[in-house]
Length: 191
Image (cartoon, rainbow, N blue to C red):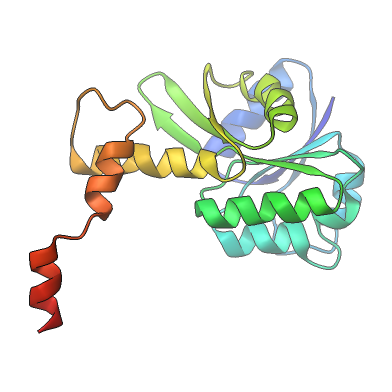
């Protein structure tokens, strides 16, 4: 399979090396800021993966005039390994779906056994993406629809930040506790 990969760094290199080892043909584009060639780049690929530094870089890679969205074949798959807000990930997936493509949010994290992926998107897109993601990690968990991979990543991160270990494996209760406002604190800050 021809897989396009946009992004760079140690994690990107490790993922691309593993995909090559199992026989996929990799096409690498390290500069998402130069969006002009992304359309031609995507047209050579069955699937495109992105691991970019921020939401602005993802936006440019996907939706610039000659970006990936312009070259998406009907039903084509984009796997976004970047860390974004859940809302941005869901919005990107909806925009790609409107153009006939599929996008999953699959932020890459690290865990005790290597890389960890929380996967969000449609069932069909997640099934296709999961088969590729399992090439470089055995820890792929489907979180739900578009944006939920990012939400699960945030919940897990909030649990590590709080230092709480217990019977809340998805981190939801920890995230809600961190987001809750104490009425006394709100009254004090209001004056």
